[in-house]
Image (cartoon, rainbow, N blue to C red):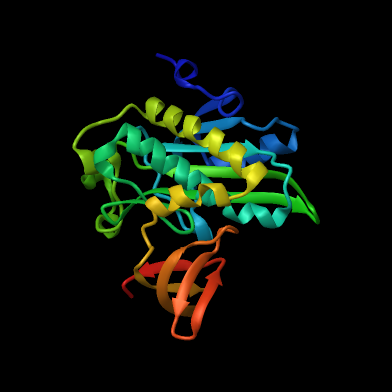
Length: 257
């Protein structure tokens, strides 16, 4: 069964480029964007030699077991509205994995991670090219640990990372997981680019890994402490501190710190 036969999308993933190895699929999409490639192009790599997460962290990218892919988006939105896109992608991944692997019980950790059993299952990285008042394009990169085993993980990641295989005890078709994510993403993205994040907030709230938790948010060395109280319509995290509720727009959240 081919990927095309699994897709229900109109645009996203209909032009799909596969490479055996890439330095970074986000870099590949950025290059395609510069040549005028249309929205919806997807690049999938079997392995990345320099995959990245947020804050330039290295994303562990061994061959043959996981999903590493990026897609090109050209939404007609104000650049400031793009900050909530990682949550849209996270919701798509969570809902797709709920259908594909219910036992993994995916949860969304603001701003851009998917957890299973408290461990990282997936990461999202958005990179934007824009000018005042206009988005040229957004590169949306997603990495999902699919058939990774615990033994494959570096020792330092074994307590922090997981995979569909680790969570469920069985292997999955990477092609089927990719199709499920793309199928889930397109209608969410189409809703978001017209109506913003607000219509999706109830679905995000059902899968919010932080809500009700005492957390600390690291912002380039400054730490904010409080209770996570959901996600706001602009994609900010609502944090209840001793001084009152504040919106948090960026940072790394640590549970129970």
